[in-house]
Image (cartoon, rainbow, N blue to C red; front, side, top):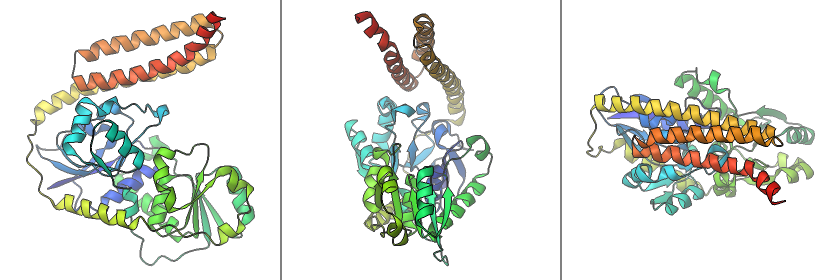
Length: 391
């Protein structure tokens, strides 16, 4: 049996690699590295099925869904974003995308919000929790006298430093994707392990990040989750019962000296979730792959060449459209210039849509859905002129 390790090559957040690290320990071997954002274009060396644990955040490039037919998936610990700023549009879960989920379900959902979303689309799912909770503490590591502050604002950093005599380590999960993507997977996994060791040895971890919070829980380090203005309840809300939670304003206002010195221990109710995740993953990697018809490699390669063309065309068009929208905001009082940008945008999308209609239905569905999302954004920009005419 062949195995693939799912990762996000161009990530700007080491949390993606922490999720990859969590799945890696269940695989007996790694025969392929599969980029999450190109999962629909994966081609193995020969005509064969490749088993992949598909825990991840899905996904920037909606045109990459559904996955390649050569992937034998374990759909577990999946999160489908609802962040409208990241094109949180769900028509890609319909048609072939939704059909794929139904055929390979039930779907293990990382959080309650994803579970609700799938139910709305008639897709069977269950709450699986996050794979990062299965990370095991390292042997022979002792607690040290420092506190980790992970992606919190400067005022919180200052407050903590004034409230404790312990060492304070300031850490960020943010990465430069252009530089980080040049590292080998082996180096990236080593970076993750070094970071996890830091979290395990910490006296306390204070963070806004889901994948600093959950791995620290797994490593038995007390956690305080800061709920600031960027707090995403849809992503983190399911897990807040496991740790101490503070709003950013309350944390800055309160006397936190005792909180830092004697942090509350994490809730261990996640242990049942971990056992179920481990059982499913272990069963998956040892199970025989069910018979499925696979396309000829040559046929699929031709299909991918065509899909890559439309994928690149789509990305080019979307980038230009977003650029137009941003530029149009500078012309708030210059109606003619802004209207021209909007018209150019509409022509661009119309041209693309006509091309796509001639091709495969699933590409047509995905592209039109994003185009529609952008049109809604443009309507919001145009709306002030409607009010002006009414006056």
